Amino acid sequence: MDCAFVFVISVSAFIPAKQWPMHKISLLIFAKPPRMGLAKTRLAEGVGPTQARRIAGFTLATTLSAARASGLDAKVYTTPDLLAGGQQGRALFGGLEVHPQGAGTLTDRLERGLRDAQPGMVLFVGSDAPDVSPALLRAAVRGLMRHDAVFGPAVDGGFWLFGMHKGPKARSPFRRVRWSGPHAMQDVWSHLPEGARVCLLPPLIDIDAAPDWESWRLSKRKSHRK
Image (tube, rainbow, N blue to C red; front, side, top):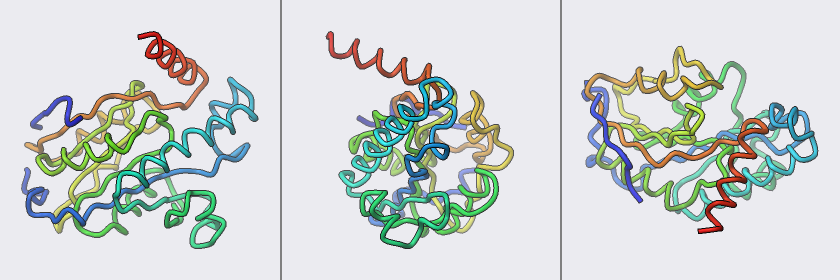
C-alpha cells in the first residue's frame, strides 16, 4: 500500500529522493517505557493506571515488531535518559539501539533526533498507533522515494508518522507546532517549503485517551465481522 493521496505545497530545501541510496534511511521511534505514571498518563485517567500500562505495552510491542520486520535502520529515542545506552534499555525496546530524548519540549527532542540522523530519509514514529505495520513503514519509504515528505495521519489531527529528506539545506519543520491537539499535522505541514510534494499514508488511530482506545476496539470488532 503506497500513498493514499499526493499534495503539492521551494523544493530547493530537499534533496530529490532518487539521489539517496536505499540504505540511507533512518527510522526514529520516540517512545517511553510502559510504566505507571510515565507512559499513557491521559489514558490512565479514563481506564486506570494498570490497564493503561497494559495498553502502553501492547502499542509499544506492535511498533517495535513492525520496525524490526520492516528491515529499516531503527533506533529508539526514549525518556528517562538513563535508559539509553545500556542493556536495560535494549531489553525494554526489543534489542534496538536506544538514545536519550534529552531535555526540552517535544520540538527540541525531535530536532535532536533529526540532527543525529545521517543524511538521507528520516522517518519519525511514535508508539501510540497499534495498527502500524511493516508494510506501512515500507510504504512510507516508497512515498519518500517520489516525494519530499510523507505523513501518516492520525484520526485526531496529529500524525503517527512523518518522514522527510535530510540534506544540507533541510530545515526543521517542528517549530511553533501545537502538539497534542488537532493541529499538529497541519502545523508541521505548514512549515514545509513551498512547492514540496507530500504523500499521505492511510490514517490510523493513536491511543492517547480512553475514547481512542474504545474507538480502536470498536474498529477491530467491525473488521472482524466482515
